[in-house]
Length: 149
Length: 304
Image (cartoon, rainbow over all chains, first blue to last red; front, top):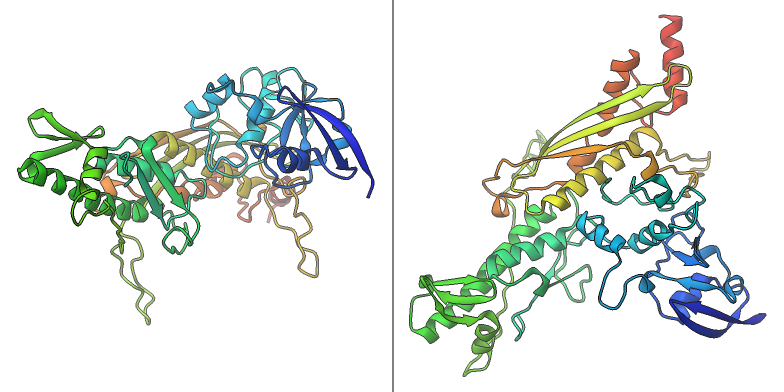
């Protein structure tokens, strides 16, 4: 098994790791860095629950290899709220009841946050480009909510 | 109950995204006067929780909620009894609200709920404030011969109005808007109910328009991924107006009854009827794909 040394900046903090080349960014985030807010569901880049921001763009971390993230800046759901204070997007999710079991919520929020990028992780338009329609194009979910607003 | 006045609530009703944990915390808060954020709901594991037989039949709020209410009332009586004994008055003369237990009409004569819990525990023959409850909802088992029975003590009712546009050339059905009204008994959590209605409509729309399990000749599902088993994305969702109708139920906890499934039920039927209203063809086999609607339109044109 070939391994590589990588350096990634996650939520503002640099990490140096030696990882097997086939290891995904999601596995590093959850398994090595223990940031379990990013969820693993379909593991094939379809559902959007593992969305993180990599160099300002929303990506499905389950289909990004850790070695591809070398030298990059990653932001996970944990990096969105400032100490004790939720991000306005998170506050809006709470206010609108856009939370049910909550398992896919981090991915939805990360997709919605990707304001700089023209597309969400799935390649569909990012929510912010839809002029406040509140849509979350990169997320697939069947559970009740979120409300359309 | 814990020494700081917080509550551990272990339930057999598993939270599957319907919001029942929140509803249970609200109910417990209502009875015990403890703030909802101090109520810790535990569910889903028989190592820590009672055995349940599943979150089905839209029964968590209605049936599980009643057990929660009964257990909370039991705990409340234990709290009032220990405080009444200490104050040498009758428990009926006490009020329990906002974390405090006080004498009716004399709010200054009070102890906190946390103090009452400790009072009960740290004394001779002290005990924990602890209660369990089980509720067997009134029902009538089916007659073995006729099959007749009555499985629900509180049936829910709902209505859907759906506007569609049918493309006569391609058979594609667009949903313009959905209005969903539902009778929920007393709305314990109106925001949660509205979300449930919208989520149920989303599920019903998928069932009606896009979601189809395709099998190969050996019975294996061929479209078992989200890329080919199509559920509606937020971009596909039409505006949904949800209307809560509140006829207080005489039996359910605080007058509440079930919500979940009713939000889905009726959605494909309303769409089928709307397609008929728009294009004068009946398509009754969901999903109403462009192919099926187009074929029905062709058949109509050819005549009988």
